[in-house]
Length: 324
Image 1 (tube, rainbow, N blue to C red):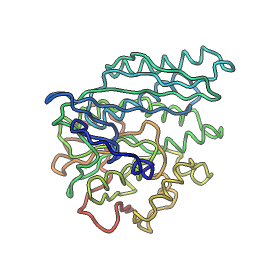
Image 2 (cartoon, rainbow, N blue to C red):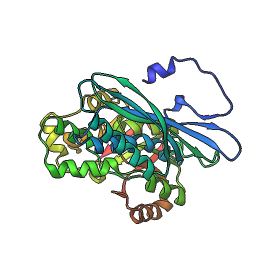
Image 3 (cartoon, rainbow, N blue to C red):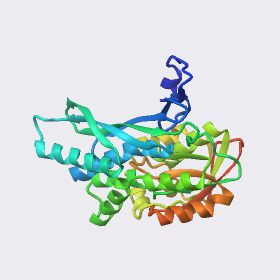
Image 4 (cartoon, rainbow, N blue to C red):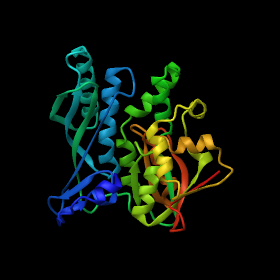
């Protein structure tokens, strides 16, 4: 996608505060000195078998981009492709009910949407939020001396692949569903209260992919402690079974020249670090002196993990480093 975006025409606009060129999580457009809009969209095919849960997950995933920028979602529009002629309409009702409930939980409102007849289900949201122009959190502010905090475990992509292969346990499905439906609202509130330098949410490009974007945007090098990164049980087993999502393999291939991995890091764990996430957590770059306060605030607000998983350095010869 970088190739495509870089070959599109650029139409400068002084009110566009954050656009597509930096691969930020959402676009930001200035309305006044006090208000800017945050705009994003995301949709995908089902990741779990329960239609209500799928609707919740798709909505939480789309809303996450607004939270990663420090914004507050206001309105959402459904994006839906559905095989109306071949599938029960009650399934459709459950998907949309799940999305509506999650948007309502976020304090936003669904104002409409668009539906297409298709051969497979695809659902998500276009979301608009607001933010103060002087309080935007982007992926471009990571600073040498910062530490990196991750708010959800990795491994949803692998377990989703295992679900499709009928290899998962009921408990594994429950755990990743709990993670994927969890809004990043509380984590976003915590980082705004403490004050951080940069943030991105971890979705389809995986932890390493989104960390690479942060490193490039910040002109820094991000270093990770592989052993401290929280992962769901079973993920390395599914790697050994070959259930690695195709997009995860592509990310690993794409980033091979931009990352230095210590030989002591198990290859199975490396594959989890590249795992394509659905509705993953926030990766937050915070000054080291504020890290303890941030982790305490995240724990207080009920985020799934509060792990310090890495550090930020002055730019080195690679964008990413993975240590044991």
